Length: 236
Image 1 (tube, rainbow, N blue to C red):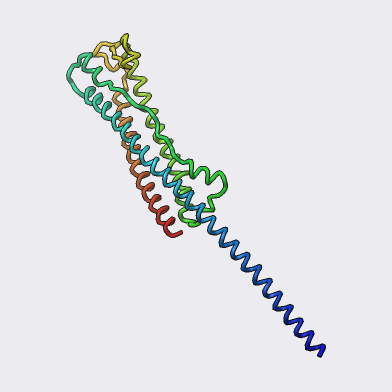
Image 2: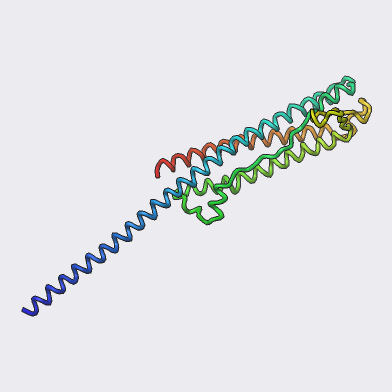
């Protein structure tokens, strides 16, 4: 009799322990599910922010391309002028000076930078997408930034050399119009005084070609990265 009671108590004890253990395991699994759900929601927010940055960067590429295209239009006219065997007047020379824009290309990486610096890059659950993001923001983007700065340094150097042969004439109403004129400081047949002007212009044009090719390549990477993010977000 006592033996039967003892067996029943053991059975009840085992049953109670089983229920307790199962309850703990279920609680842990539920908490893990909640954590995973929170992580995926945070991942979506982060990736949406990165997509917005990429959209802004796409616009910045377009603006930068427009600026350097306009610059090139001006120096191509100067190349044509210097290659022409005809003698040129001061007015003809000055009309090919133009106005150059040396505003640089602006990177847009706030969302990725915040993710990386906070040590939360692992919240992106797709390892391949992690790699793509790191490669774009830590390799592709800074490489183009360096290349674009080098190109603009050549433009600035050309403008500096060009302005050694001219002076700026500001009218009395400059504060209202922001307009100015050029005055040639050398005789037209002595322009340009810099002996390697044509070589500088050719190198500048080569730099432009390299910059635009790199820009087209980067835009294709940006488009693929945007598609990868969108596809991954849809799968979450």
